Each structure stands twice: as C-alpha cells, then as structure tokens.
Length: 142
Image (cartoon, rainbow, N blue to C red; front, side, top):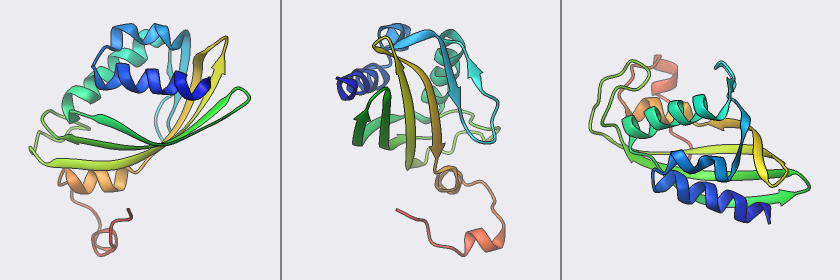
C-alpha cells in the first residue's frame, strides 16, 4: 500500500500537479535535508518544490521503493535541465542526472515526514559550479 502512495506522489510530481499533493501528504508535513533548514508545512514545501522543479525541469524515475510499517525508502534517479536560477547559479541549459535517497514516514495513509539525501556534488558539477581541485579530480559516482 505504501509503495502505491509513493508512486502516486511521483505521478503528481512528474505531472507538476503540486497543488494536489494534499492527496498524499499531511498539511503539517515536515521535510528534512542535511545542511538545510527543515521545511515545515505542506504549503511551504509545495512552493519550494515548485521553484526547484521549475529551475531544474526535474523528472523523478523511481528505481527502488521499499515499504515496511510506517516507513517507505526510495532510491530515485532525477533527470532534468538547468533552465532557471538554482542556488544562486544562473541557468546553464545543461542536462542533469543525479540521485536522491529518501525515507518517508506515513501517518493515516499520507506522508507526514521525509528525510532526503541528494547527490548534490554530482548536481553541482552538472550546473558548472566551481569545485575544489580535490573534488574536480575525483570521478563522479553513479
């Protein structure tokens, strides 16, 4: 059942129907990303996600969904194109591909919380962010 919940989220995400995320997420949804401020509240999450999707033209390709109890783990390949300002970097037009790993908590049949770890190093390389030499010399992980 929880696998279907994530699949529905991915459908809404890819269709850019973020105004319908209340079908799969609670109003008090909390999003956690290491190194970033937690996002509290579905409306704020929708606005933030919309801005990122617009800038990166993201499409989610779920590669693994594992559910147990009230938790869902996902491994998602994201693709897109850098067409708008992202993290202060102007659009490059570059094609993008990176991974995110997420742990979701389900409450009353909807997602209430998410912890996400994105491969931001790969993403930053693809939008031409200058990186330290020791990072530039290492091969991207796929």
